Every structure is written in structure tokens, then in C-alpha cells.
Length: 241
Image: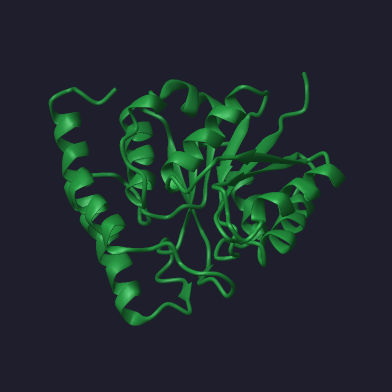
């Protein structure tokens, strides 16, 4: 039986300062992990920098997209790339060190008994560093709201540090996924849960980015607010593919 391998999908847009630091850290955590940088035409040259890293390291791969199309579309492109190859696990991870690579080992350990594992900021209290109180409260209440509306049994449904078994992505109708911002994280977990897959969470400490700019905006928040109701209604009427 061949050794199982995982692919860490890292979307980038203007992450030139972070990428040379985060990628070696990911690769050092476990020799079974490869990295796919999904660059949305970063004007700061992140994509070209990633190409140089891939030329030197066979475990690094790059997927170029012509323009910024959103987080959800980037991950879906990464999932499709992974499914065309023999990866057993597919990870989502930010490029800005808000997701510490050391937790990849915890996700790998947990995926042995689950189908989708999420790194949770709220599994053991509140573990977020360097966020203003307004954003922390928004995130915390948003997750309470998601659980109340959808019933999704997660403490951190909006988090973006995840590990999917290949079988989950193969079973989901990825072409039917509608969300693109933080609602994408909710939708993917909700669809997996409704398909009967096993969900698990591992605690992480989330540290706000030091380099670069946050991608959060009001449109992303609005999308998440209405998407949870859409998901609930689709599931209620049996229309969720």
C-alpha cells in the first residue's frame, strides 16, 4: 500500500513577505505533506516568488489564477487540483501565520478518527491573539449564530484551518458550492455534516497577521449572515446536493 500523502492548500494575494517563511515551516512538520500555493495574480509578485520556491523544492506546487476571485474559489481550485492527484488528505490554511503550522500534526492525528477536522479558536475558551475586541465579539457571536440557525455541531464554523479526507471532497458537489468568503467555511462543513461525515475539532491558538492586510470586509460578513439561512432551508426541503 502506498504511503498516504496530504496537500496543504495556501491561497495567496500579496503575501510576498509571509510565503518564504510559512512554506518551509509547513514542509518541516511532516514529510508526507506537500504545499499548493494558489495565487490570484498578486501584484506584489507572490506568484513569481512561489514559482521560484517550486523550482527548488519538489514538494511545493503553484496554481496561478489571473485575478482575485475570492477565498472560496481559490480553495475549490485547489481541491480540484488535489483530486486529480493521489492525495489522501487536503488541508486549508492561511499564508499569514494566523494558522501555526505546528497544528498540522494535530489535524493529522485527528483525521484518523474523523472525515473533516477543524482547528478551533473556541474549543477551549477563546484563543485569539491581537484582535480588537470588536472583531473578536463579531467572530464569537457569528459562530453562536451559525450553530443556532443550522445546528452545525462546531464551536468554530467560520474558521479556515481544516483537513478533509479525500472521500469528503469526492462526495460533495463542489460545483454547487455558492459561498466565497467566510461563509464558504460554513457551507463546506455543513454540506459534509449533512452527508453524514464525521466532524471533529482540535483546539488552536489563532494569532492575527503581522505582515500584509486582512481580507475581511462588510460584503463577506453579509454573505455569511444570509448563507446560513439558505443552507438551513435547502437542507429542510431536501435540496442540498
